[in-house]
Image 1 (cartoon, one colour):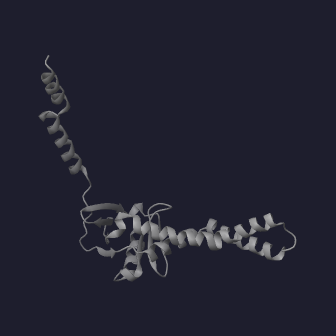
Image 2 (image 1 turned 45 degrees about the horizontal axis):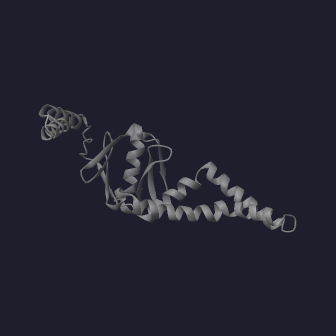
Image 3 (image 1 turned 135 degrees about the horizontal axis):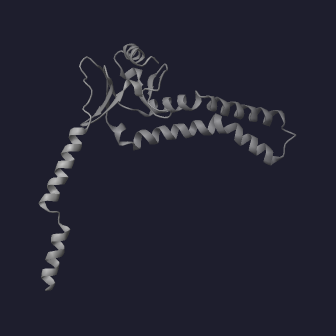
Length: 200
């Protein structure tokens, strides 16, 4: 076999056949057809949300400091600071340093970390660079951005948290849709609909 013939045979083996291309196209079409269509958004409430650093910061503070573990951390820090103050002459420098670190951990260090974390998440997450449309409809919530969308049935809502600044719709213990009240036309209508559909 000549060298050129050998190279031609290798190229033929490497290139997909028309049959293989047809199968790939058929599989792609089937996958697209099976993709769940967005819920019917007729008569839905639309919330067009642009995530800001202050919105993420509010969520992270509430998420971290509204739980039992969050409050427990604050209690430990306050207790450590009290011990430093009350036992100024009792403890060695190392013990005082450890207590001081514990005292600052949940009262200063963690809050500063949250500030930077909120900024980093909003600036680096591609999805937060554009507004996200949340359609609250009969079947659930449709989250849409450009041509991408996702359906979340009402049964998928685990918890609803309402603060003075935002409505937070949890779909897992750690993840929530954040709807700032100052970006909604009628926050009360949104809350009432979610409560009606989820019983939360």
